[in-house]
Image (tube, rainbow, N blue to C red; front, side, top):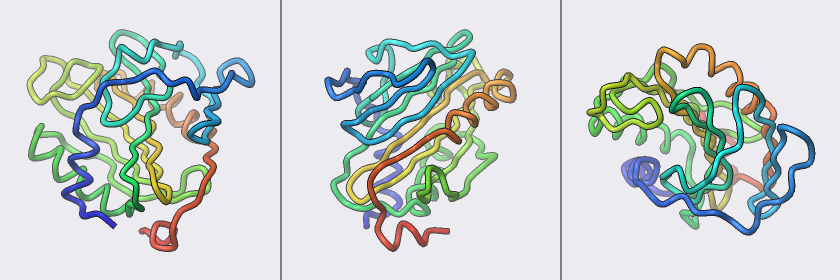
Length: 193
């Protein structure tokens, strides 16, 4: 397993959002399935599908939705090639984001999502309302749900102005609750607390 410091850099590092030919057709209105990566979820109102090239994420963007103003939800894949412990990823991410961007974490826990142990983190700081940057003029909240599997990590990320978070969190939480993920976790990942 990789150390927490290494994973903080993967979570925060910026990569270009890339369109993917592996994205499967939608099974129903509001639902998205990605057979290549092995996940499905339903993202309801007020979200509308958005072009992937509008978002920079620390991984490969698989699908995105825009909401009111700068608010967005992006699902992306990180491919470290080895198993990552959800607790190490969480602790390293909170530490790095706090030092690099001066964020405050209101939620930092490991919980079960889609039948797998996952990092669940809510942080707030300066940004654009659509991203944290540590200097922007809009108080911004990000809610990260990252589900590590044996060789990769599926991340669902909400970014929005902090004032809008209580309302937008309802639809985001519903989307995360609908998340179905294929694949397996190691014994260590399954035991993460």
